[in-house]
Image (cartoon, rainbow, N blue to C red; front, side, top):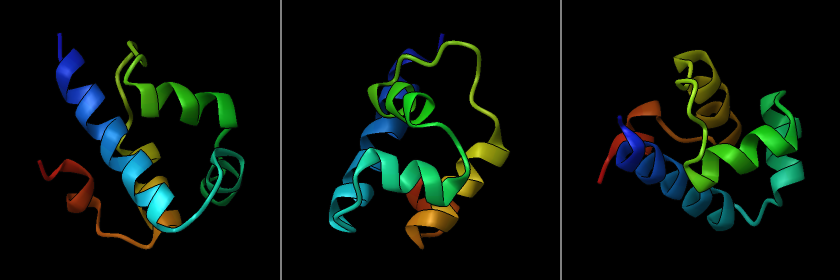
Length: 72
C-alpha cells in the first residue's frame, strides 16, 4: 500500500538533493537523520510509514516547501 507514492516522494527528494549538489550524507546530516534512513526514503523502500516530521526536516534541509516534495 502506498508503494508508488513512497517511490515518488523519494524520487522528488533525490531530485532536490541533486539540485543542491548534496550527497546523501550531507542531506542526512542537515536533516538530522541517518544516511541509511535517507537512502531507504529515496529508494521508496521505507515500508513502516513516513512520518511527516521527517519529511519536514528533509524539506527544511533542502530549503524547499514541504508541498514541493508531494508535487508530481
